[in-house]
Length: 214
Ligand code: AMP
Image (cartoon, rainbow, N blue to C red; front, side, top):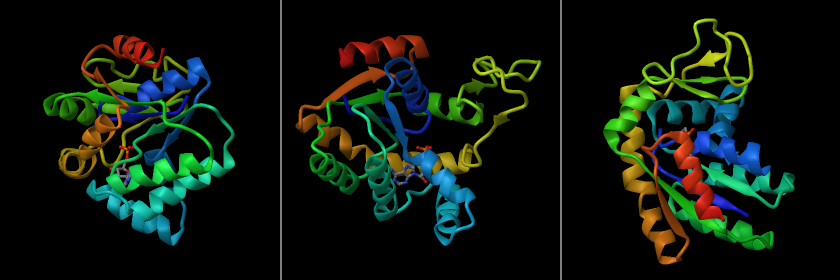
């Protein structure tokens, strides 16, 4: 089963992808994670990507489609979760072609709906365990006082993303509404779209997604 998790930054796509990896053995393909890896390398592409990401803009279709193509060529799985990809209509068309080439189908697109105020509150208070990806929130799920991750036990592993600040977030949201939200209509028209309320407790969202994937 191959699925897309669609939604603005902070909607909880990464958290839900992690549940699906743990419980169903699916493979998460997050272009954000791939780009953060590229950014940390000393390549020319890394420098370009770092600048674009810091501004909260979108990296070119060519680069992200290339990254996804490479991963699909290298990875064997019957269950991919596309997390943060596609983000433009051109990327959606490219994904369709890539899946066709590989004889695979897209089974579902799950849109995670969250309102802007909740996104800002979530993102500006967010930190993540670098070891396992567990997400913490200063207000609702603070980092444990002993500094050990409650999920994987790693010590002092909490990081805040450089682009999780109000200025970058504003641009990331603008990019979402301008370039990514048209995908909602695109997948609706193809009868592939399901919606879940991303504002609910993460466990409830997980159950809603399980219902869609049944
Ligand atoms: P994310 O971790 O999905 O929030 O992505 C972080 C940043 O990486 C975004 O703000 C973009 O700058 C870049 N990015 C991630 N995925 C894509 C994509 N599919 N297309 C273009 N840029 C992307």
